[in-house]
Length: 202
Ligand code: ADP
Ligand code: MG
Ligand code: MG
Image 1 (cartoon, protein in one colour):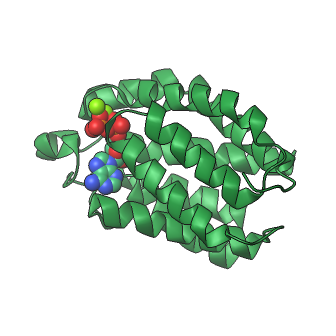
Image 2 (image 1 turned 180 degrees about the horizontal axis):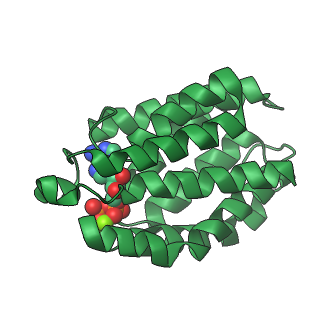
């Protein structure tokens, strides 16, 4: 870990983790309808580990924190989302390397590159009914219009997945039967992104 003023970043991360833990039941219920029912548990387990480990990161720079978070999630989150989040966070960390005090523009670029990494590893584009349907519009809105707009874009993107036929992940086995229920991974993005917004507004 390279030294930096990570207390604020850690506070934001802890808030996001707590929100994911609080939403475990709802995310699991969604994944029970259109997947294998483990998303809430996967993310809550990762959130617990990240929350505990983050206490050691308060004196680190942003890139180190995202890199450490990537490692925590890679080790603790099972399933597809663990690998995808680990990859996305690693790429986001790289975008912030060497930046002592990232600006909102730097964070927007990191979010954008992290999203690209998820799309590349998942071989996914918008419309496939995955977390990318929340991440991609959020990344664009964050760069052009700020965090509040990003939360709204993620929310709209996640809601729109309910009308999409799945083409990736376990939901793809359900085909049209998934229509009517939104993608759990996309809803999870709304959970942690709105928690970040709330912590920054606090
Ligand atoms: P698993 O299907 O292995 O149990 P999780 O339950 O951890 O995975 O995560 C499911 C979520 O991961 C989905 O709701 C979707 O948003 C996302 N996802 C699945 N496959 C892909 C993919 N190829 N690209 C991007 N996101 C994906
Ligand atoms: Mg699952
Ligand atoms: Mg699974």
